[in-house]
Image 1 (spheres, rainbow, N blue to C red):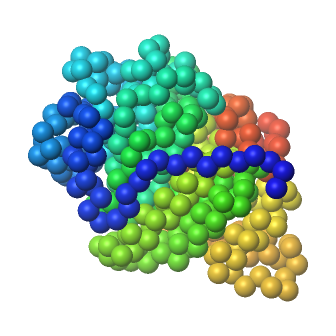
Image 2 (cartoon, helix red, strand yellow):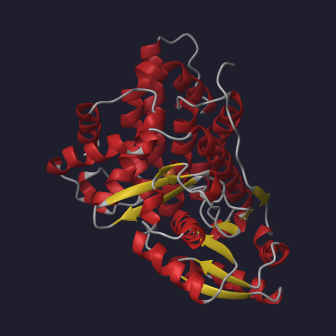
Length: 383
Ligand SMILES: [Fe+2]
């Protein structure tokens, strides 16, 4: 083992009832007034209300900030900073999927460091840690509650920027599978495939390591075994728990090993055309795997085995076919059947999308080193 590897993870509590610990954790962190970052969808299904009640019962005043879009925008981060400062808040709680959590991380960065959130783009550019942050995820996909990533949209430039820093790892993640019971099937499918992509990209990342691999392969096994089952039985808390665990393990893997071309290309699509993250990843996954196969073939075979495929005795070419078919079949069975053109992407968008994707920090750890034309071809195949 020649290379140094660091494993960063927050304190987390996993299991039914974890959400109810928010007041106690916030009080232990010394909070008096909390900025609660959430979004209208999560407010509507009641999880934000539950967190508010719990904080109030612990004698903490929550200030709700819910003006967060599905692809959170720099402006939304900056107005959240205003709310944090004007109300003299001393802690941030994020409740929701990746959008409120990424927005909350941005609010924390600017609250402590000043400036504009877009100034912190890139790797290790945040010098002062934000105020304490507690994350409560309500999807089994993004893992922003355990990750070193915050993805923010720059609306003027139509790009998503990635802020990657140990300082954006939350202080505490309260991971409660009960919150998944209000997800509809399409969101369950898209976030489940997003978690699968996290695990696959972390496993074949050029920064992989045995410790990250354990979590990545277990996440792949769990998602392969439980995604279709949970779509059949969305009220089954046991199955929801397994998907939440898969998301957590995928998050631990990718937060440390980083990602690859699927995420670089999905970020480009999200920034330019405001397309949903999970679905973009799902659409691109098998196309990117086909491209990466020459460099990552052996690792993809391990992924195939984690998906319970019997690949013994097959040539590498046949293994490739079987693995890609399994991924394609899983996507289709989960109801993800659209292409990029169904979402309004046209051939004329491709050169711009590819140019931005090449510059995304997630591309750095992709097993193949693509040029502009390679990425254009992958987008064209996914149209
Ligand atoms: Fe993702």
